[in-house]
Length: 382
Image (cartoon, rainbow, N blue to C red; front, side):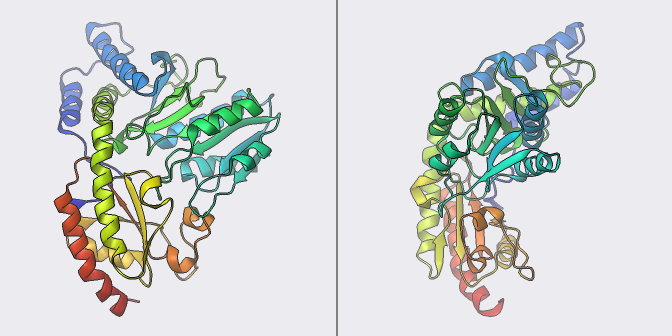
């Protein structure tokens, strides 16, 4: 099997699986308990929080564990809306956000809040000038994805954070870092980030666990109430096994970040150059160098992506569609549409996403399969 869909999810590290098994079967106390077993689990949770905090240059007490990226995004948005209702009801986001941000923003609009949806250029970048013009005295939150999950386009987080605080120091800056955490250098102080979301299963950790960084002093309200766990911000017994395992995955990601970037960059370059040597292909987004090395979005013109996906899957190669499109309704990826791509290109978009465990041999096998399949499928499967 050749797995090139790592932006969707990743294989858990052996050490992650071992840690979860140990915690589930041996160290299974309730972290809220004052017993020796409970205190031991609480120590594991605190250790994981320290690892995550060091990785993004925040304080341990600013780390809150969630069930993943979707909960973190929802909490950041709805919690801010509730906590800062008296300060304003204006929010800013982009047209290329993950649904975990886009749909909560739409829900706020339905409740009477005002949301400004920033445009992007043909490469997927927002305009700092447009952002500056959009920020108002009553702007509560700006939420922007750091690395786009479909195209790998990287926004200039430091410039965005600086601009927000210059225009309105009271406006909070939320970053969806699900595709960036552990793969891209993040410093919440230098980038002036107030809220940041990540998900464990994107960095070879467990599914069902993530983190919301919340700058100390923010008035984000909890929306899970109960026994007062996590300093009263998120009730419910902490998922000790998943959190401890997340700490292991995060530490591995931070320790090997630079070598991982170099490795996946080489893989992406080889695959991209091989694909571009084929006729009627193009890279979507910020080109080969500008975007995240972990994501490559390519259009195979004259071919529907789902047809190619099924063909590659039959050969044991797993990738994903650049969009879940419906050719009858002529709708597709909102990200690629926001970038101004025509439907004829969107319907042939395929996303390849890499991890540090992929090999150059796998890339060559994938290229060989593409070189054989693409001409055949273009001819017989339109």
